[in-house]
Length: 369
Image 1 (cartoon, rainbow, N blue to C red):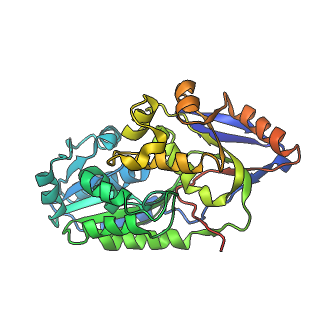
Image 2 (cartoon, helix red, strand yellow):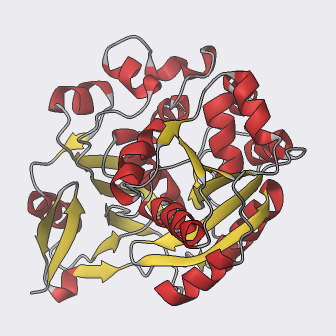
Image 3 (cartoon, rainbow, N blue to C red):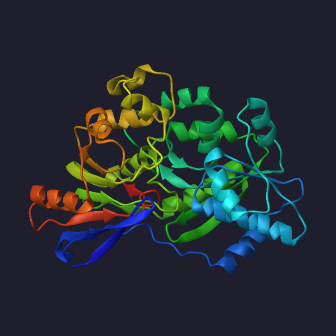
């Protein structure tokens, strides 16, 4: 009986399954760059004393790339400035003790200034995304600095379903938002094992290169799955909040059969992770009325839950209060992963094979034609 160790926030939990009851869903495979190879790539990125690094997420790969840029610049006698989002500052400070890392100002004048300076380098990890189709610098900037534009994005959708790995109206709006910016960006393709590649250039071009690579890594979904256990993307710390954990579910939607059982392994030590989910939990928003509200962060998750709750059975292993998860979100609750596995076998039979997906932010499952 194999033991599978699954990340659960700051610890790991064991899933014991017979070989005949386990089906590992292979994620997109790519080579991981060595430190030497990555250093050579980073060395080719031009920096000066005027350069300002702006990491836009707190993923391990974004922190690693930012630290490597600072280290190489210091070796050349160059001191780089860093303006971080709040969610990445602590990790950056732990990694780069020599730097004074400030928080990027949210006011519009400051953002316009940074976005239109060639000395600015935005840094993002690129993933698939259920709302925009893809995640990277354009979507990060739009979410962080253009609330009104996010309202336009929300109402540009063609339907109320997730569209991971697809080019649809929301991503077009994000790209148009960044089209005339003078700033540069670094887009990172990585998984739980490390960094595969980085793409540097004008924002739209580097993002396009990254999404092209993600598309090349896509996999055909030949057969829908009746049960799935979703692991955590450690690189992006997706177990920290319910919002980031739900992204894993929506990114895997094309692999599921109707009435499939999905179990999310999701510690959520940092809480709900978005205003919309928090408001839903506390009774300040109604699930079915998502289309009547101006956009607030995470509103798409209300839409997806409402649209898909009758199609799939969603269960969760989380430290969040069971009352909110069950009564407000409609999720089934498990106390441990072994209980979840046994329930799935009870539903589907003792010979059933439970599928395990461990990095849904990278694995693009194409729709069946």
